[in-house]
Image (cartoon, rainbow, N blue to C red):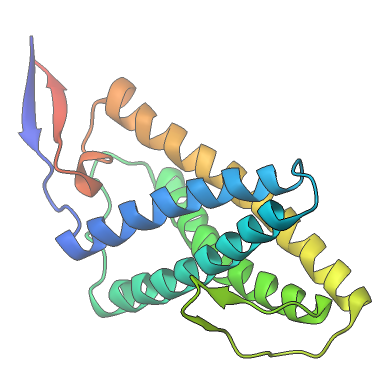
Length: 187
């Protein structure tokens, strides 16, 4: 027989909302970014690039808000059942994701500007140009942007796998702390 217990020491509602919005937008952005490589040049691809850039700016804003919230309202202490190495790995993955999700939009912005293209924000305004046109710089920076995208996708897969492992194998409250779920306890 299994019982459920509340996720003690869970994240704040604000942290949860920011986490899940960023998660959804980032997954869509990864799929969209990879899809761009398979689209034929033309107006449709240009439109998708504009949406990709706009979404990147949104991710940058959300990540600044997330980082600000995390610094102002520290996360709860680690789940007590975790081993030290798991806590260390968890912190490393989280901070790497924060860094990547802040760096990726900035690299995309720089790369677009260096290519000579604007960075529109959902048709409302354009981001200011932060570098002049330089095709070689654009090629290098957008290469870093793509590489970080794949690294980030790998870290996200690791993060999701760990959360599911904790939920369904260990049946502890690690995932429940970032959701409204309850920890599953065998009893």
